[in-house]
Length: 97
Image 1 (spheres, rainbow, N blue to C red):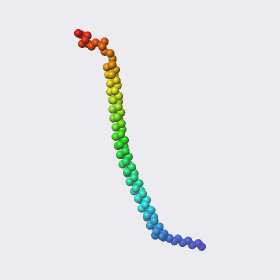
Image 2 (image 1 turned 90 degrees about the vertical axis):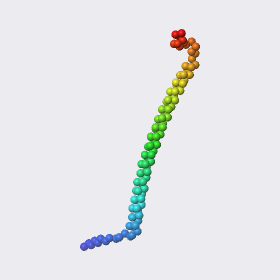
Image 3 (image 1 turned 30 degrees about the vertical axis):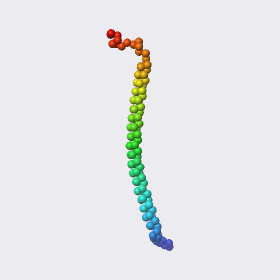
Image 4 (image 1 turned 135 degrees about the vertical axis):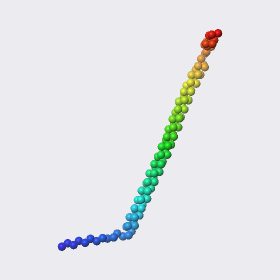
């Protein structure tokens, strides 16, 4: 005949305390991660705003540069025209007189 007895051994108190401390530590870690994620999302939004502002600034620079190039081209044309010898050219009013 075989007898079997089950007995419950209560773990020492410090094991329970350590388990509670580890649980608190994990909870703090998770809360810290949540805060980090929130900060990361906020920083992403701020970064996106900075990028959009930078793109607008870059677009305005490109537009300004194209205007300057167009004006410089017109100035070059005017300089070429002013260097022509126009002594042989008559205007409409000179032709009528």
